Length: 188
Image (cartoon, one colour):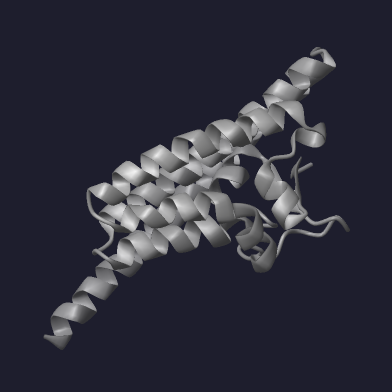
């Protein structure tokens, strides 16, 4: 029995090492492409279009993070998977190790990071406060069937409100940014 567990753990470690190398390569290539696109486009856009581009970047980053949440919840054994998914959705913007500086995986891919009022990267506490609205919606995903219905009924309207606030408020601020006293900036 112990050998089987050790064998499974060895396979999982090898898989994580492979995924880590693959993600690092993808991140490097995406960052290079994004830098070229940003340098080319930003200088030619009027101010209102820059705001829409910034909101689009944030929406893409959140979409990547939500895909990660769904994959974790679906692929890891129940109920551990959903709990890990909730933890990722709450704590992800507070990553400050392995090259991350107040960034979730989605924000790192898109080239954004979360900062505190003093300009330092977001910490775990800041991440939990700013991601609490999404974390509450994600929490319902633990409950089979009806939880997913509640997740959709709460999560979609919440996402619409968040995008509306980013388009309307100064500095593309959303409800979570106000709660956590944080801002999202480019990683330049």
